[in-house]
Length: 444
Image 1: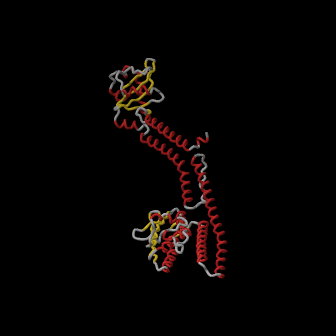
Image 2: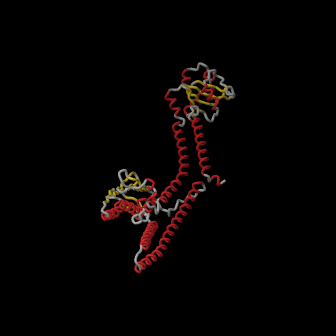
Image 3: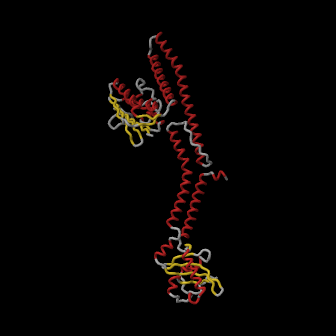
């Protein structure tokens, strides 16, 4: 039974069912309370009714005469004497509203007053004639202001409608908050995890329904993911360190061999591949250290970009090329500085490598995103390679020459760093000439 109650479907179903029942109950009672024959008779009406009953008991022939004196009729109204069977014994012309009042209200402890077009109907009041008890009801003409005042005796339909609406809103609000509030907490924690905060502890939601189960499942997923990534980074670091030892010994053996014998093409080839392997290991170690030691910071954009721009301008000058950059000075962002700087530096150096004369870096703010566009005037790429260049160790057709192509990790590192910031990176051929790489980073 407890498991059934903790089921979210059952909670929602029962809650909406109860809301419908409460709304229907209030609506039914609303229709009863605003009906014009449901007003409790005020004191002045009871006093007039009691006085009229005494006068009838003292002089029934005069007071029950069909042609009652106008002064009495104007003061007390037209009397209706009802016997125990609910029959009017002194009047033949009984209006529909008077019949309804007589039929619905015969409790002497609860006299009522109602309206009938131009008349006020009041009753019942006990009256004794010829030693027999009867009920007295009165119909009297009323002025418009009197009728308006009597209507104000009842509960206002607007007030009752507001009560019904407020009650349903309160119930719906409580139900919605019960469902949505923990989900918002989970969403906030999940956003932090998506930005790379794998040590984020999800909120403890002590509930037995699906929301509580979702929280437990997400926490286990985050813990497992955190452990898997930590193991991967540790393994990558260990492998890189282990590879450096035999690589160092191989380089030493090559150096000794070159001293003893004349260099040969085969030895030179082995030396080049050894250097490339060393570059790959250094890149992997650098990436591993940056990921392990990465900590988010909030800093101004120039603090991140200035050094990169200066380095790229210097490198471009050595290559007889130009590098220009434009970026807003008053933008701050939350990021992993080393990872983001490495990503941007790798993309810019890759552009300088293949540019003919010029590379530009343009940074703009669009809504809640920071857009970084690196454009060169090089040969560009085939359309089929635009997505592949971000894969680890991928070498484009223009970079297949081992003497100039690098190790194929620069753009892969950039893609990994941008993804860790919750952003995206894509490459496209510029309409004029060259390759254009766009980085989009969310601004928090």
